[in-house]
Length: 597
Ligand code: M6R
Image 1 (spheres, protein in one colour):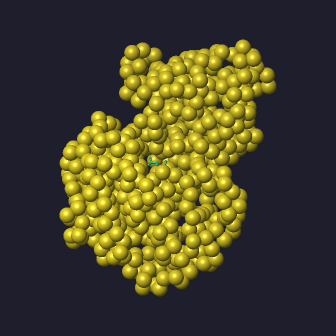
Image 2: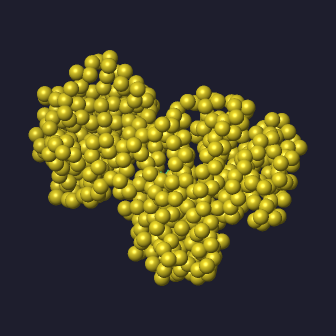
Image 3: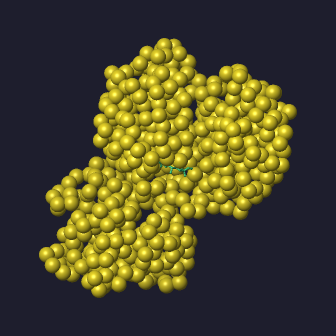
């Protein structure tokens, strides 16, 4: 689970009337060292909880690592999310003489649990105490409680952050993601909002917050362990870049039947799609960049206005959405809190929400009116690669479905676009060979201070994505611009040897666009920049102006991002290594799934 956070890690084991804890700041390897230091036998037992942290409240130091122990040493908790009323709860505990030892919001839950178990109405009752505590918490949380007096069970709760049960034979698991227990069982159960679950080795019981019985949704995990491992590559990211042909192919599979685009969702009938008068896309990071491409595709094919907004901004500015608005929420993890809140806001305004998501059983599809799954498989590297390309492909499926429903494209035109889309996986394959060239370019550039990315039309979101990859992996300042904007300011940044990546549109597309970007390349070269040009095979016009030229197979203009992005992923990974960042799967300060706002 380290990909969800790696600022610190810890475990607690309940056995023979006591709870033992080991925890350490830093990656999991530090925790392993710590366990060796204290002796693994000190952590013997059959009921345990563990946590890898992404710091929200409190620095990434040992004291703030989870699990947190209660004042009497009998309760251990781990927590994902943010307890919004922790300050008031902390003050209350301090008034009662409890000494808090961490800076986290989470620690209050351990002490509240001990108090509920030791005093008053719920005294001696583990489950009732957990319910009482959870009912007092505000915010988003997945909480696991372990109690020294009940070493045969774990009580857990969730609100707005993920928690799944893994059902084994004589053993039970809980995890924020199936990756936590996929090695042991493929049978899982999804919990509802505000559920509490009690597990012991033989089974599970799900409760509502009022203590009444609830039910979960059982499902079988279709990922295998191997898919979640590196498969011979030196990093998950490299493996995932190489899996992109399959990710796009699997995402497209089954969505065109007898020449008709199929969304698989009752709620998104042709009648509804025909009735919409605007589309809103909400997403974050790379998913947002894929959403920018949805705008180009949907407006071009379906002639419906599309607005796109970073999810964290959406609900705070009162956007105009109503029952005739289709909101597309794009998220690899399906757990991104900003996107989830945007979904909730859109629904409260009467809009219908279609999730584009890579993770079965996650929160965003569950709260949306329908879902179009991307089939990229598990993406473990924090930097999104195959999920991004799969999102672009899925967005194009939506664009075609809307065009089909509205009749803005003839069936034969839709078929033709679909055929071009279906050729993309085969065209990504030769681009995977560009890895060596990208490594050489990275080696030549070394640890550079800054880098610019330019594109026009659909090349602009690709430029943004390339810059984001470089920032997050190599910790280098990078910016993406529409090439036409250069002359309005950014050209002042150009100086000798500044590396500039240029994504060149096809000369077979809009010819003016191609010749304009060729002029842009000349302008920056004249000012000393070193150009890394990404252009299609046969485009000879760019050759004189490229310090390095990366070729991609020919395709239609709108499909080009599905190809042009690939070398930018390699470039970012290799430049990161040149900068000494070996662990490209886990860049600093980030987490794969950002479940806080
Ligand atoms: O899981 P999501 O797709 O909702 O995540 C959104 C972003 O946090 C994510 O794309 C992030 O920007 C990636 N680290 C980019 O590589």
